[in-house]
Amino acid sequence: MSENKDLDQLRQEIDTIDTQIHQLLNQRAECAERVAETKLREFGAENGEGDLSRVMFYRPEREAQVLRKVIDRNSGPLEGKTVARIFREIMSACLALEKPMEVAYFGPEGTFTQAATIKHFGQSVISLPQPSIATVFSQVESGQCNYGVVPVENSTEGMVSHTLDNFMDSPLKICGEVELRIQLHLLANENASSDTIKTICAHQQALAQARNWLDNNWPGVDRIAVASNAEAAKMAKDDASIAAVAGDIAAEQYGLMKIAKSIEDFANNTTRFLIIGNEEVAPSGSDKTSLIVEANNKPGALLKLLEPFQSSGVSLTRIDTRPSRTDTWAYVFFIEFEGHKDDDNIAGILEGLGDHSRVLKVLGSYPKAVL
Ligand SMILES: O=C(O)C(=O)C[C@]1(C(=O)O)C=C[C@@H](O)C=C1
Image 1 (tube, protein in one colour):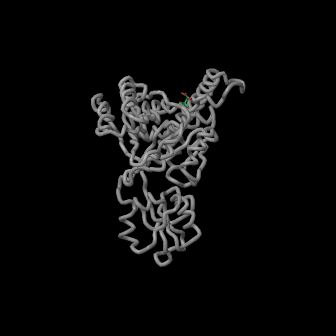
Image 2 (tube, helix red, strand yellow; image 1 turned 180 degrees about the vertical axis):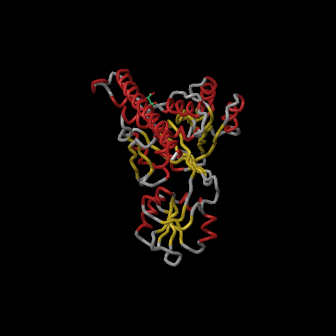
Image 3 (cartoon, helix red, strand yellow; image 1 turned 90 degrees about the horizontal axis):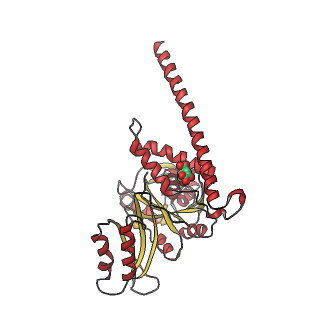
């Protein structure tokens, strides 16, 4: 009896707090609506006049700052990242009130790229699957979609060369990054068994990430690389001779059973995705910059390119090469480092790089991933 009384009292307390949170949420949403009006005025686009496409409703640097503040001031018992995820959704809903964002991602539905899109933008975004990485770029370039999300590197398999190649010819800017822990399962429909399964399908990256496990557990079974893991899951849905290597979202989406869980060869298998858009992003206080540079074809050219980073104490976070598509046996370097292109020391390095390279393309400065 007394336990019930305690419970009733605590629930009343929760109801009171919920009412306060609810009021505050709507107060915050009203504030975001006023932010939108201010942004429209700034671009002379109020009352439907002016060029609405130039209004920057989505502000990656501000979102990163808000999420960092949440984590910094958190005193528990909830974990910082847990509270940050809640605030991620609050900002997502507020942004949708300002303007619903349309985000193209490398689809179909159920891919890790869709999961990365939701992790970065929250649930209130309109996410639109695209058949290829190139189409994600073209949808954003043409203004059909506001932003795009593409995979750029995996901790087991390295760079996604197709994404880098698309950057070479694109005017788009990188305006964010998001990392996703990739857990892969072997999936099949409920009529499937080790007797019926004759083929294992997945995107080539997923097959590579689970290569040892597949060699050890399904030797001799054909593996076929298809356009995406979600595509493989779709094939497995109606065919008991096919198993797919894919993640939780695809399993759920296509109602498949997990024959084996977490089959990736490395426990920390993580993929990094980039957010691409038409605008540059202002400094957030903790940023990264990505660029493509083609060194002069002279001995020691790469050393000359990298030396200023070392002497200015700037951390390189990634360096990769791709064949130049204009010259045989010439290479372009994809370089990422800590800092924003508008920081004084970085601006100086970039100026020097221009002198020692044939091509220098700054792909963008953007906030380091928070979640
Ligand atoms: O500060 C802004 O510019 C806002 O539009 C507000 C807000 C938010 O809800 O905090 C919403 C969307 C932006 O991407 C960043 C932040």
